Length: 440
Image 1 (cartoon, rainbow, N blue to C red):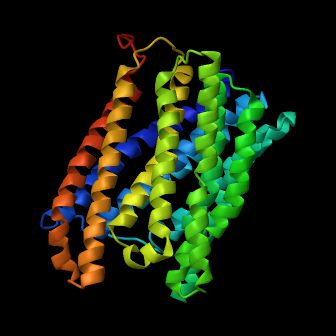
Image 2: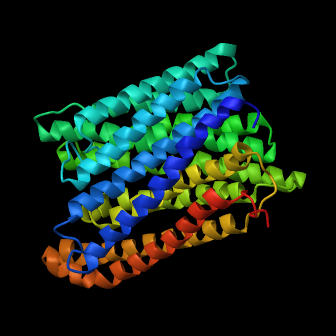
Image 3: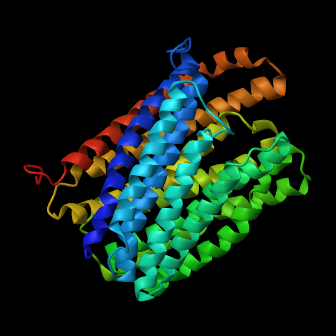
C-alpha cells in the first residue's frame, strides 16, 4: 500500500463480504422453495426471499466497486484521497440504506420494479451517497491532474452507473414506458457501466500483479470502451421486443450483446502470455486465480450463454424460463462477483500490512466456488430446457411442469450448497488470513 487513505477501502470490503454471505442464505432458501412445499411460506414467501437475494447481490457488488475505487484512485493519481471523512460518511449512508431496504423486504414492503424495490426515500439516500463518492473521487484526481486510461474508464463507468440509477426512481403510469426505461438501469448497468468498471479494476490488478506494460493493458481497455458503447447500448434491444417495440431491436440486441466479454478475456490472455514469456513468478496466486478464472467465466456466462439464450429463434421460447436464471447466475458471478473477490484478495495483504501468509484456503475456495457455480448453471439450464419443452412447446400447465423439473432443482440446490461451502471458506479466510498464527 503506497497511500494511507487507501485504508478507506477496507470497511467497504468487510460489509461486502458479510452481505455476500447473507445473500447465499437467501439464495439457497429460494431454490428450496422450488423443491419442497414452500419453506417459511408465511414468514418469508418466495417474492420476498428472491427480492432480498437479488438486492443483496447488487449492494455487495456496489460496495466492492466503491471500495476498489477508493483503493485504486490514490495509487493511480499518486496522491492521498481528497477526503477520508467523505468516504466514511458515504459508507455509513449507503450501508444504512442497504440494511434498511433489506429490513423493509423482510417486513413485506417493496416499491418499484424488480431489482429496484428500495423505498424511494432510501433511493434518495443512495443518490446522495453516490454524489459524495463521485465528488470525492474527482477531487482526488484533480489534485494532481494526473490522468490515466484506467482512471478515465473507471470514472466514466461510475458516472454512467450513477446517471442510469436515476431512471429507476421515477414512477411512470404506463407500464410499457416504465419497462422501456427500467432496462436503462438493469441492462445499461450490467452491460454498460459495470462492464467499464470491471475492465478498469481488472486492468489495474493485472498491471500491479504482473508488471505488464501499461500500453498493452490500455489497448484492451480502449477496445472494451468501444464495444460497451456500441454493443452494450445496442444490446439493450434484446429486451425490447417483449414490450411492443419494433422487431428489429430483437435481432440487433441478440447478436451484439454477446461481444462485450471479449476484450476482458483478451486482456487476460495477453497478460498471461506476457507472464509466460517473462517467466514471472506471481506472489499473490489467489488474486491471479480469480482474475483468470473470472475472465473465462465471464466469457462463458455472459458471452456463450448470453448469445445462445438471446438469439431470436431461441428466446421466443426460452424468455423468462430457468435458462434466464442460469445465464444470470453465471454471468453475474463471472463478470462481477469474481472481480470483487479478485480485488479483495489483491488488496487484503496490503491493507493489513502482511505478505507472508498461506494461500491454500483461498485457492480451495476458488475451485469450490467455480465448480459449484458451473454445476448450478448447468442444472438450471437443463431445468429450463425441460420447462421450455413441456410448458412452452407441448403446452402442459406451469405447475405440472415443475414436477418434471424437480430433479434438476435438486441438483441446483446441491450445487448451490457446494458453492456456499466455498464461499464460507473464503469468508473465513478473509477474516482469519494473516492474523496471528495464520501464516502457515
